[in-house]
Image 1 (cartoon, helix red, strand yellow):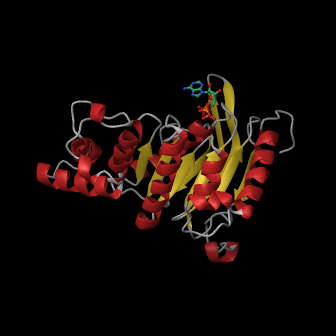
Image 2 (cartoon, helix red, strand yellow):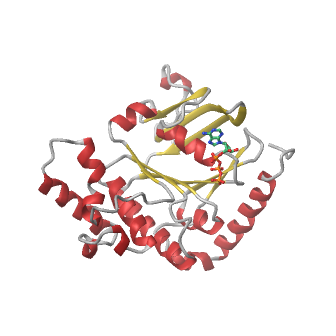
Length: 275
Ligand SMILES: Nc1ncnc2c1ncn2[C@@H]1O[C@H](COP(=O)(O)OP(=O)(O)OP(=O)(O)O)[C@@H](O)[C@H]1O
């Protein structure tokens, strides 16, 4: 990875690398007079798969919302391909997926998949939208379920539609907040593997909030551990080669990384621990 030198960078801050799509610097967030995030720096290389993990309430979702432009930091700045998050969102560069798929119950899968695109681009005809929705459903492995309504889909299938809906915008970045948190373990594994394959096919930059150590290591290139003490963030690079499938979880290096990440997470729960 190339680090920008100050001389070559002109007015670009020295910490911003050429290949960072997302760069958050000095992010602090205060909500209801509580300090949630303090002076957090986060870089996400273009095309990378990054996970955020940490104790409940440490501010993972808040940080994701800051990246999405949904929460304004009290201090600090975020750049997404050189743009402020609200501007990047306006240009459809950000796709969001939450734990709840939030599909419209009266629309079928293909219409749900193209719904945001239809709102964002009023010039598209109904058949254009359907074609794009179908293409995205095929990408997420639901090509045969286009006509089904949400109540005819399983939880995993509904999340696939939510991913298709986000991808229909062709965003540069996919921000995902515990998208598989409500699924059973086997479905969750399968969804993680599908997401990995979608990532490799599309080249999107993905930031995933998760509580699962295995999921973070299976999927990510970089894992960032947020601490319960605001301001603490530690990073772990996952050097396991891609493409990865679930057999990677039996690799001795995977097992070593699980132990290392669990140790980091344990430390992140200590309010008085070292930063
Ligand atoms: N709108 C809000 N107003 C006030 N406080 C908030 C708001 N949203 C979140 N918080 C607080 O900010 C802190 C961090 O919340 P956040 O949801 O970002 O944590 P998290 O790490 O994602 O938690 P979890 O893993 O349980 O989802 C919590 O103490 C929460 O109560």
